[in-house]
Image (cartoon, rainbow, N blue to C red; front, side):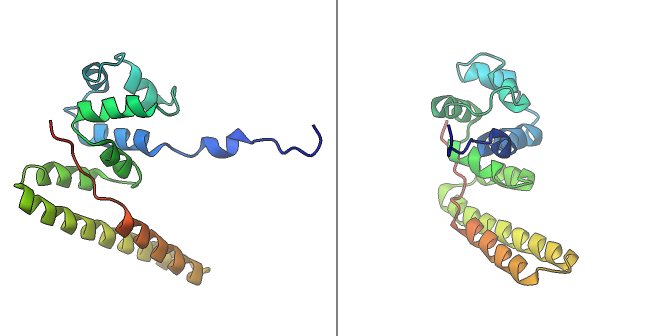
Length: 161
């Protein structure tokens, strides 16, 4: 048909699903969790998570993602938030410790953890800015946007159970 624009899927194939990225990071940080075991505990086929991690399945249904998150002891939003950060290993380790605290102290610790993540992102962006010789104004604007995104993103929460 003349005048229609075709949809270029290859342009979007490099976009990663933050849920799947979060799974990858959690499994890397937590050797006690095994994809097959979590799949079975979630009531799914034992290869479901392995296929997600391998890229065979591009994105699970919300119900499936929720079952996986619950079986891992995380809220779905936790896994997605972890997947949105390039290296969330320190955050995962910190969350594991924070979740052992009494509730009143846990909230304070989560607020402080958010502050530390913001500082880490600012430092990373400043180092990146120093390595770039041109485009200084746009880099500062990106840094401010990334810091604002971090500050506005929800703190990860673990589900009870």
